[in-house]
Image (cartoon, rainbow, N blue to C red; front, side):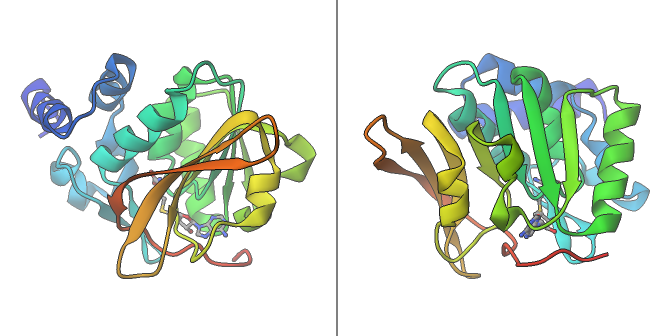
Length: 212
Ligand code: SAH
């Protein structure tokens, strides 16, 4: 179920969906996604689908992780990244070797604890975690060269825009429960924000406050 053939099939599917970055495809092939879900779901870990990870949350669909990662790193080398919505840490793990340092925020303490443990076991060292409300970003570490938001707010959160460096990119799904638009926002030198729509997606909602 975690065989090379199963993973090859997933990579082919991502390629036919338009994912071209070889580093991204390599990461999706090599990251053991079955370690991020319950054993009962491990046989489905290399399907291109979101799966439950408890607490009403889901591990993101591989295609969406690939698309967001490709968009984020497409503008050149990134030193500091903010991730909002660690979840089980799968997206974090795919991204980690492709950037300098990741700052990842999760509002649900049990999920964060499990993600921390999984990334520790995988030997990933360039991630700092925070239990908190990602809507507020991580002002002490701002500005960020890139911001990746893995849950959908109804509108673009201004605090996150304010923490984006000049030429920095934010990849964020925006919209209501029915479906959202994945946006790529770029902060220009004159302070204005360039907005591009990447595709339609379906994320869990970005919620306020943190939960123990
Ligand atoms: N990409 C993740 C899945 C993210 S699911 C993965 O690969 O596993 C979205 C996550 O965002 C959930 O874990 C949810 O608890 C979290 N979340 C929602 N609102 C948040 C907020 N305001 N701050 C931090 N995390 C938030």
